[in-house]
Length: 186
Image (cartoon, rainbow, N blue to C red; front, side, top):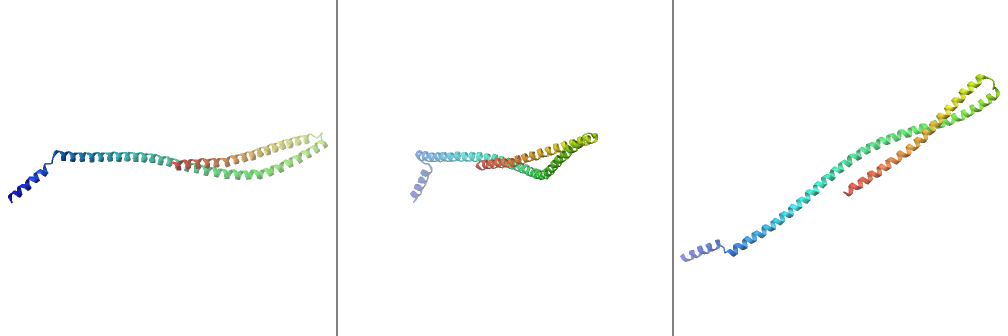
């Protein structure tokens, strides 16, 4: 029995002192697993770098979207102001239309007055007061005609402004729509 105990002790000692080949294999295995771990860590580092780049680009995209939204809000406010101005112009335009009829009546009346003045001139060529009255009436008539021409010009200009105002919101809507499409692509 004593011998058995000695054998066990010797075999235990041999297990603790491995051969150089076993040591080399174990070191080689540890080295290979270290290399594999190193490669995996490098790959994870690349992934983290890529994710960081993506996050930075997403941050810049968010900032640009924020700027675009604030610009859109400003443009919406401007469009509201333009819409209010347009409504005021239409109200003014309607008033000009009412005055246009009045001006046409005035023109007819001045023509009738001219005819009457011409008749009076023919009847009373020698009366100086009549000439003065005719002169003042004629000046009044010219003033009325000039005023009516100015009002007609204003009415035409209002029509032109109305057409331009109608064009501006459609152009702004097209540019806003185009910008939104570009941001959706990003």
